[in-house]
Length: 252
Image (cartoon, rainbow, N blue to C red; front, side, top):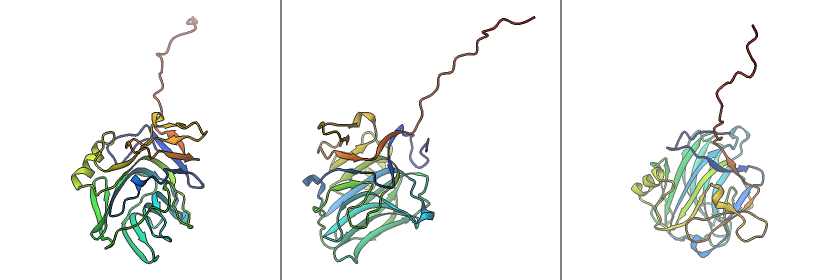
C-alpha cells in the first residue's frame, strides 16, 4: 500500500481504491458533463495495473466510441498513460500517448482537448505530448461518466488508487494547470463541472438508497454512485508511545 506520493507535492491521507475486477464509480449523465468542443481531465492516481499481465484500465471515461465518441484518460500496459478522443468510425482516433513506467507511482496527469486544434497531456504540470485533434465537435451524450472503467463493450477496469478527478468544459491554460498542481484543495473553478476528492466527508449516502456517493464538489451535483470501490486511508495515524516505566522493583 502506498504511503507517500512521489510525483506530486504532498502526501494524501485518503484515496479511493479500485480492485481491477469490477469496481467503478458512476457519475451519471447530466447535461453539464456533455462537452462538445473543449474539455480538460485531471486525475491524481496510483496505478497498480500489472503491465506484465498485459492489463490496463480507464481512470476516466465519458461516451462510447462505437456509437459516437468517447473521451478517456487511461493507463495501459505498454506502459503508457494517454488521453484520447475516439469517434465513429472506429479508426477515427486522436490520442496523446505518454510512455512511462506508470506502475506503482503517484501521478498527476492532465489532458486537454480542443476540437480542430490539439490534444495535450501534462505530467505534474509539465507538457509532455501534443497531438492533432479532430476538426469537428464530438458527441459524448450517450453514456454516463464513469471512473475506474470504460463505457464500451471492451471493458477494462482500473486497479489502484484515485485521489482526485476533475473535469472542465473548457481547456485550461498551462498556468492554470500548474496552479491546480500546487493548490489541489482550491482548484480553478471556471468551467469546473466535476470535482471528486477522496475524503470521508465527501463519501456518504446522500439519497438514502443504500449506495454510497462520491460527492461532487463542483456545485453541479454530478455525484458518483460507488460500486465496489472503497475509501482507504493510505497514511496511517501516528502511534502514541509512552515513556518506559519501571513496573517491578529492582531485585538486589
